[in-house]
Length: 104
Image (cartoon, rainbow, N blue to C red; front, top):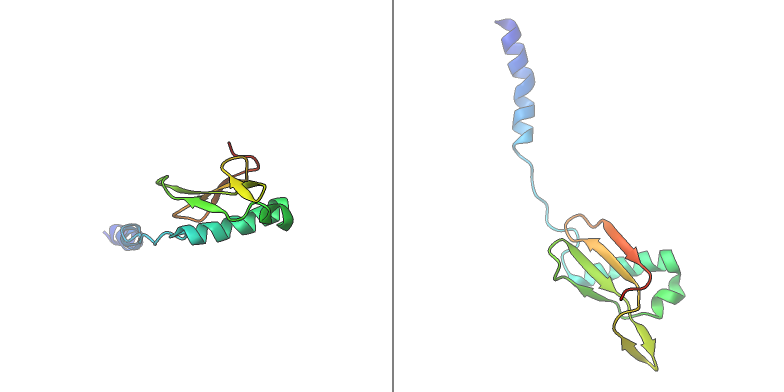
């Protein structure tokens, strides 16, 4: 009988802890935050000069799990869609999913 009580006392804290998982808010809650994270990632990967050449970055939040932040190649001072950098950032965790040098 003592052994049963020892086992129960040992397992109860694990059962209580396992049932109280708290969800946190998204670490990347808005497009401005996603764009700032992407700036840092792109500057580290490709250099400050190449990253600044594709500013302003644009974050698309239509994907349920990821922000897709894209840069734009400029021709005659006008930004063109496509051809620039892209960074996938997980909305919930903030983890970088993918970094692409040339987006279609």
